[in-house]
Length: 131
Image 1: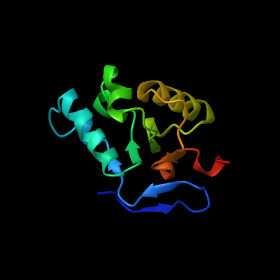
Image 2: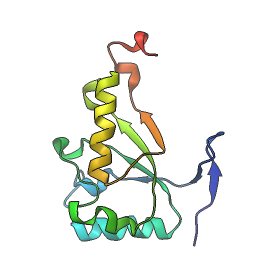
Image 3: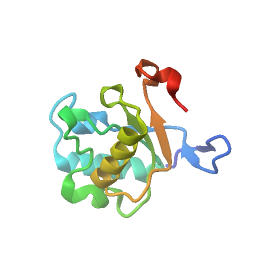
Image 4: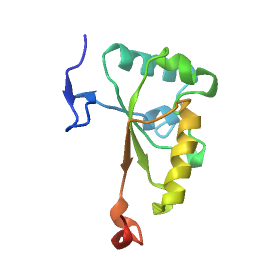
């Protein structure tokens, strides 16, 4: 059973109608074993979901949505189109955003993300200065 996909504006990316939010995988709502994380991600991919919403600071900044040894294994070598939400203390400076992206790439064992999504930017103290 594959989920339907649609093009995201004029990006050329065809994303699944259904996304996969990863907060439950980081023990936010209760303990989740690494094996369950791998099974959940693989099942989502098998269903055709290719839109994963991740956040780097679950669990007090030590989030591992996919366990260290299983980051690539959970995906089975498949590429994920990811929406990234950067929210660390509402610091949207170019330096912090760049650093946050690099941290997330290392944490998720990826070379790049397809989409960078800044969440709650309206709360940034310098929002009028954004370019």
